[in-house]
Length: 634
Image 1: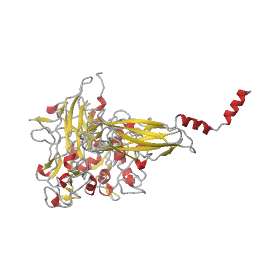
Image 2 (image 1 turned 180 degrees about the horizontal axis):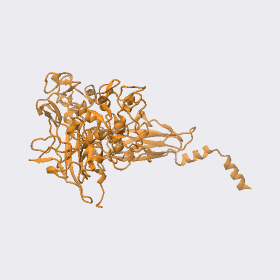
Image 3 (image 1 turned 90 degrees about the horizontal axis):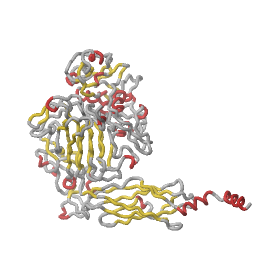
Image 4 (image 1 turned 45 degrees about the vertical axis):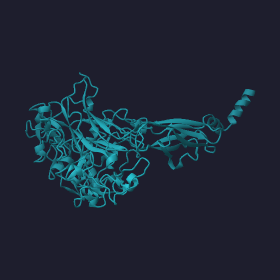
């Protein structure tokens, strides 16, 4: 009877009582929302901590937070909007996200440590301490390691045989500016009126300006005389633009005297030519070192450039020229691309990257100009946290990866890239104009069968000469793939046809306010992204929800914003008799889920690293033919 009465009493006790007992035993818990990463001197990072509790809503646990650095002058901190500094109520179903920001002054180069303390202020005063250790790097110098897993790439031959030759091109930079009364500054904030990449040159670690001659660097200007070369009209949109010699450019940049523009100086890799891969063997690689001149120049970009693999090149006196794939001219006495041209011969894929001194980098792979050698790009292991640590596959992720990249317990993923291209069709007939072939045969064709009857290595496609000529498809050995966008760039009057000779569109065909070329390039009236539209629009440039086309991309609007009002002309519509752009870029996205398929494909193709808004001097790897990585001889 006593046992029965006890059980009845227990049943009458409210559930909240047990929650209170639990809260008294373990009143709250801390989960780290983002990883603590290494830092570059002069940078900041924000780290999230999630406070949770099982306490009932009517009796929340009140938690305060504090941070104690070992050296307050070397590791500075702040909490978001006071955060839990004054105390915050936490209860079941209502976790609290606390952001603590860490800043390392510019003169600090040693590891910094401290303690993050969370303490209950009601109840029994339970507390938990989290040690924080931050490795500090003196500057943001980087390395990019390119590894070749290609055995015999399409276009192989000439002097370089089956090998790959690195092709590296750089982006333009502002010309050098100087101290004047218009460019003077006392903090980095003073320079925001010029460009987003300008910082105050000459500041001491304590924020003072010894000598009083600090100025906004990065080419900042209000008038031509603010520039080292005060050529008339050089100051454009608050940045110096004109150079006549290298001395008119910032450290780490060189003058293209043909265009009178400064470009990042071409970095010299440890080697240009990478040996062909043998299954089961050791892959050949080259390292590109990119020094950090940001403190001296006041220009926050460490380097901005692109890489594409060259194939089938002639080698004469250390110069690579006349490449079958991705030719980029020559520079006397080196293996670099032609500085004056600063471009590859189409078609070509690109690994693109903008490396920043104290804030996150951006990087991507692009198929907008074509596809040849498969690539993948990713942070060097140990250089940054994984995408899963950030819960976002686009933070320190792997564009071009041949495996599916999963985050958030498999809820927000990027599908694997097969690098297997299936030509799109129009009216049920293949568009062979999108396959790039060489001139080894030249027989006119409207099907692969015609070519295969001549030689099993021949396919129907478009040669470079016919791409800028009449558009006739002929038999030849495959080299890669064209894109409609690149073809219109090369020849503005080109007419696209399928294998049945049905006309798809011409580059100059008008669709509403845009030509077909404008819709492809997201230029002209189509230069406004449809992602930014709040209502129906027949003018803006493309946007697509790739998951609707059986392509695996994150569906969270916080990771990949969704397209609500696409341009019907861009999507394609029989109502408007418009072939659209979307059907002729989807095949690219299907082959490389994480690559740019068109210019406004940013939402599902742009990667950043590291997270936490800071910089840890991330290094990167680029793998060529990643589909062969780890394979052994048959």
